[in-house]
View 1 (cartoon, helix red, strand yellow):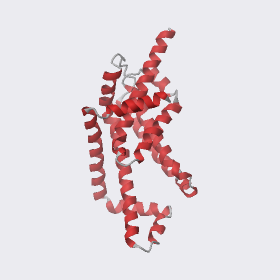
View 2 (cartoon, helix red, strand yellow):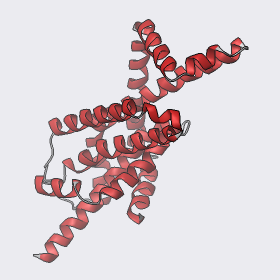
View 3 (tube, rainbow, N blue to C red):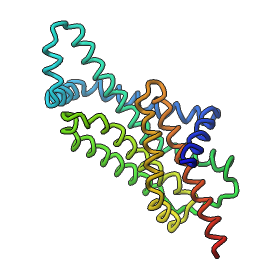
View 4 (cartoon, one colour):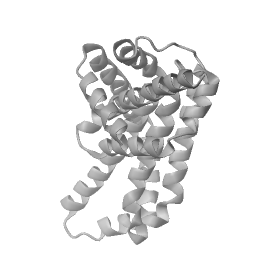
Length: 242
């Protein structure tokens, strides 16, 4: 637990570095422009899908039953906005994981772990495949847990889904440049509870207004700090046991 908060605090400090600020901005801007464009081109199709989803969950009937039209319209616009922000955050996470991680890893490694050797056990293909698997499972979690929303347990789904997405996205990428294949395999399959804990901590930030704008890069930095610290300790312990 101490290592989790230590990684998170170091990541928070790194956010204010000039190079990191740019890395925060460009994936988010790309995601916003992308979904504004997609929304404008396919607005009718998306509106039909959203209406069907709201109808399936019973929300559409609840909104339609409101006597005050402006309240109903406000709620509907609010739901659309929440969906838009969710798509932007998820897209920013994916962009950060695939394109921004090498720069963030270099920033963290050069400052905190300058002597940690690069072994390049991961690959670009592995990073992309890992991101696609994470996204696919994330979507499956949302789809198959829809019934839980009707019995109240559904309130936990966003946090569990966000925790899974964060730890699955960033744990591999954070180690891919420094760890060799054996170290990568060992570290990815050990201390899973801590990885989920860090995933839950960073994933929860996605639901805090304004903080969610920096959450993707903060999450990436936190996992880089956490995993590089684990790798450094692993190598030190291995050398002592030889």
